[in-house]
Amino acid sequence: MKSIRKYNKATSVIEYSLMIAIAVGALLAMSIYIKRAICGRWRQVGDTFGYGRQYKAPEVKLWEK
Image (cartoon, rainbow, N blue to C red):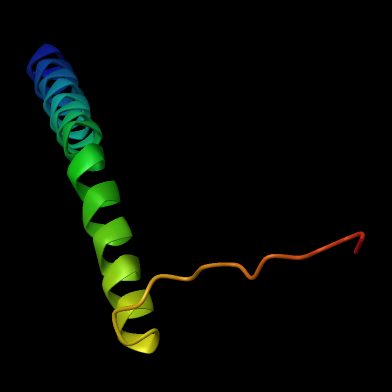
């Protein structure tokens, strides 16, 4: 009877570790798409505040002739 309990416990540990490994693998595979989505959202928010214009730094003249 004890050997059956050990077998069931070992099977549960293997199943849980496999599920965690699959979840981590899926998140790693999707990380590129998640990063692109976040960058796109930030760009959209920045364009909204800038009325669609891109920032252009003014020219600074250090020495005038």
